[in-house]
Length: 315
Image (cartoon, rainbow, N blue to C red; front, side, top):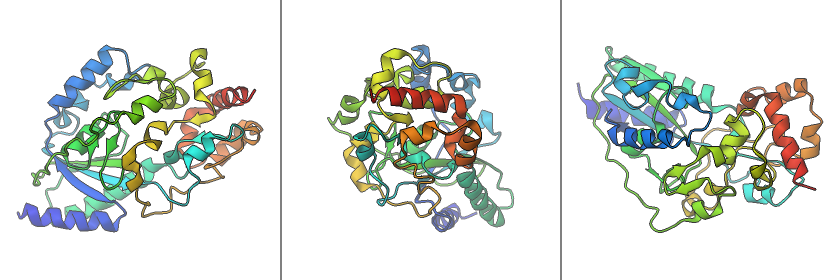
């Protein structure tokens, strides 16, 4: 089998489906495993028990999907230059700031479907091609895999950075048994810059590459269940779903490219919604307005919790 030729076809098909970049990683994630274990040992995962409950499957792909020898890692851009800038919304206390990735359609289903379409195309070329696709949906070390696959490097804020696209993109993976040519691992290009660390409203980036989720506004407004500790209320400001501050100040995001699809364009004016209006929604309205949106996953109770904090911060 001509694996180089197959990889060339995979790149072509991926671009046709809306992906922006493809890379290939092996399954040795031992370095990432050490970082993960240290992070969990410090309790930085907070309530996210899923980060450790699967044992070693997260860092040993062949345990999650038998016979996996390669991982096809793919980048899918989600930003648009026409969207109201996130920093402009932060300056308006009466408006609600929503993480830019969550303003449109839920990426999970869309990208997973495209990954399956790509995989079936590969299978027409390679009959014994076995695979399983993922996008933020299983115990997968997405960023570590993408870094090994050459899609970018992990920045000091722990997000993946690409020199041609910044960090406003999703990642998807195809675990496979086909020994495709391995890509060259990305190198680090943050230099001495600490803008992401300095801007964090709650000082959640406790050290370069170390984010204490228990302090992170994205975690607190999305993953955290129950009341948010009062010590973070003021710092949350008008952020009601996620936080993009560390991405907002990153110099590399001046290279962010527009998505090739329109699915992630803002729905229901989620790029600049009014806090008072959002607070008038009952649960039925919330479910209707967030249908097909990643926002729905936090549920109505957490949604109202976040809104109340933001409204109180107007006083």
